[in-house]
Length: 53
Image (tube, rainbow, N blue to C red; front, side, top):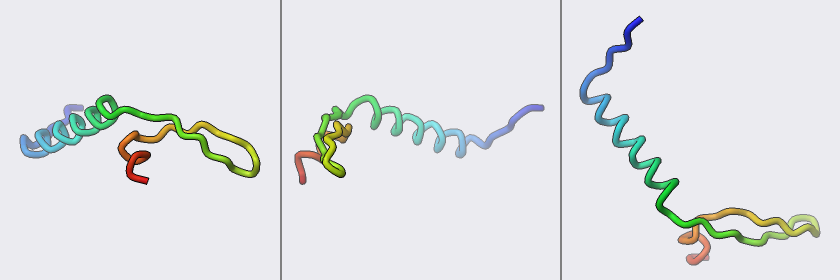
């Protein structure tokens, strides 16, 4: 079975995949300490979100 895809759809999919890959690999992730029910956990968050809070 062959999968056929329109050129416009292929371009949109490639743009979304490239954006997702760049989002995951380029933005630094900071470890944030959060306390839940008396226990301390290290939670990974994007550094840009940590700096704006």
